[in-house]
Length: 173
Length: 173
DNA sequence: TCAGGTTCGGTTACTATATAACGCAGGTGC
DNA sequence: GCACCTGCGTTATATAGTAACCGAACCTGA
Ligand SMILES: [Zn+2]
Ligand SMILES: [Zn+2]
Ligand SMILES: [Zn+2]
Ligand SMILES: [Zn+2]
Image 1 (cartoon, each protein chain N blue to C red):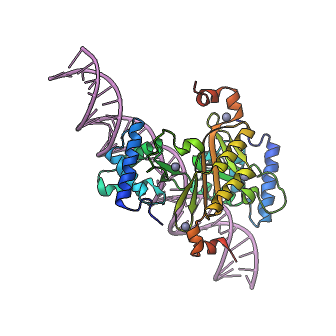
Image 2: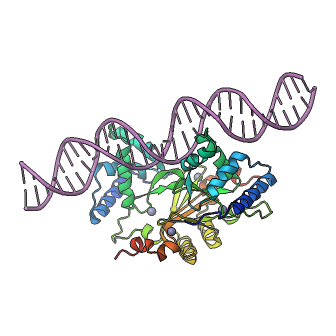
Image 3: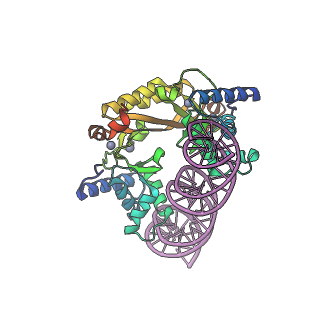
């Protein structure tokens, strides 16, 4: 389970980029929101709201469920994090640290997909156009207008397969 | 919101087919499980476990959360219902009533997708190969071995679009 | 006929996830 | 000052899901 942001420097840079991105959309990455974002970004495993709350309490003893849920709602709106529905957990967007100028984020453009490893818990975010287009086509075929898609898959990551964690569950005989 | 099973006759036939299917896999569709399945099948809207519990109490006053969750777990294992993760709710499998002999069900073959209408709440189940294959390809490309996929989308169904419910939300200006 | 197993479900208590509602502090505009 | 807004602390509650224990019903092999 590799960390989402390796060094403290990288993390600071990612947070600053996120702050800039918020400003451009007329929002404010306050200290609380920044703290929660940092907690989400420092791992590549999705974290539940209450796990985040526990961590947050170290820095902010009075924190309560609404504290963290409000911050999460904000970060979701800004596209800085995503919710993994299968896990009721939250994970940083792969592009959260890339302050790539223009106002559109990949989620609005073509959706995203998550691959959740049952071995190590790591979750990989993809932005696969073929998946997004196939889903859009399937929906159009039945006259359905898409607004938001949730594509999540459970399985085993390459690292776990290589180390045999997946072999036990993946290759029965 | 059209009913999942129109008439009582259809419903009975679907339940009997489900019972036969369970028998073939060495399981038993007991009275409780049959009641819960009937409740899930009689609508095309996903129902939460506690909504089901309320309905179930009419027939089974002593019902408690474990009552319904155990039945739901069984029905999920048998592939007779699905869970919609975005809603924490359950819906009948489109094929629940089709006792089509062989032991494989479509979910095991190529996955399934759900289109959830924000206007009327109806949820459409698709079994689109292109979507499933695109996702499998994307996963393989990063060395990820898929085991179970969750593909859900929110938007507006054809009926709601036609009646204008979607126009308000779908076409801003 | 009785001891052992298994499946099923009733019952109680509990954990986990998420939100509602109230209120205050600080800033901004006038 | 006053009205208004955003952000967040605080309390209480709603919704979703499980653990653990128990007994009834039903086999199955002494
Ligand atoms: Zn993303
Ligand atoms: Zn892994
Ligand atoms: Zn199905
Ligand atoms: Zn609709």
